[in-house]
Length: 418
Ligand SMILES: Cc1cc2nc3c(=O)[nH]c(=O)nc-3n(C[C@H](O)[C@H](O)[C@H](O)COP(=O)(O)OP(=O)(O)OC[C@H]3O[C@@H](n4cnc5c(N)ncnc54)[C@H](O)[C@@H]3O)c2cc1C
Image 1 (cartoon, rainbow, N blue to C red):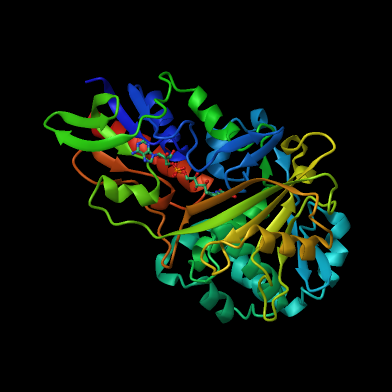
Image 2 (cartoon, rainbow, N blue to C red; image 1 turned 180 degrees about the vertical axis):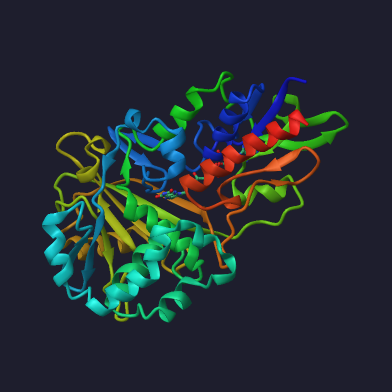
């Protein structure tokens, strides 16, 4: 055998699985179809700008990040803990009172926050904040919409802020996501200040890969996986690799290519990246649009941010980087550039004539959908020697991918020691 463990896919789950198995004393080979490690976490450098492949943030409050990542080495540039909400002509900043005390009074006085709705939201959310384990009681789960309706969270805070924010974070505008899962995500936002590494989000998987003894084999897609009497063999374009056990850490859409497991439902989003000579707004917060009567955005953009305000390393000095995110579960998810520019002009109240597009990333399988009941599953055996891991087995997040990968690394160790 060439290795004890062969890991297919060098996303966060595959990398953490490989690190755990290596730490447990096994020889590990990691195959990656793409030209870089990181899977859904990638960054492109364009004319001195850093554009992640789909806007995302790293939350240092994730327990898996605290435990297994050298966060100081990433030099996180923090976003504001709060949002700017545009409703028609008006913008309001709602911010965490502890992190942003200067916004506390305005947040409490805002028309978007009534006392009764805040009380109902607190009742809905605080039990999970204090005891996250209750979110895993799947028999008490509902869809996010049903759950918020039932809790009496039904005013402007829900309509104009929560629904829009969570739709952008979950890539799901239907409200069909598990309420328990949504509360877990919100808990992390309440506990941490998300940010962007100085070298871009790719610095996270690059740090993880740097601790592997064997370099990840890039541009090396697994074509076929076959269980043989004493192990497993993987056919790649460069030949056959044999190991005692395989971990399939491909994204959710690719699992059925190798196993009899059915595909996990996913949701997609797109991110537009613009460079601008002038800053359209000075703010470290995400801007949400809730200008549609009844809530939600009036155009294709669910959230936008002047990314370089919070993360200056993302743009060359004197220039500005703006992201705008659309959701693929909406008819206008693939809006034209002209429509996106028109929407940005409305949101920032400025012309985008001098803005230049750096990238438009369309990510059809950005996140697994978590309908109720939310189940934080373990990696699953799809054969005698094939273990399946990834965020789709746990939770659609960096935290979910890391914990699922770590658990897979430990599970194959237990298997090999038996
Ligand atoms: C646009 C976007 C925004 C996000 N925002 C956030 C956020 O703000 N916060 C957060 O916590 N999470 C966010 N996420 C989610 C997070 O990035 C993912 O949950 C996580 O990266 C998934 O990691 P993974 O290892 O499970 O899967 P993947 O990253 O999909 O890794 C699978 C890997 O397998 C490889 N592969 C596939 N087929 C083969 C093959 N045949 N042979 C070899 N290799 C193969 C792929 O190339 C890929 O590298 C976001 C994701 C996206 C896309």
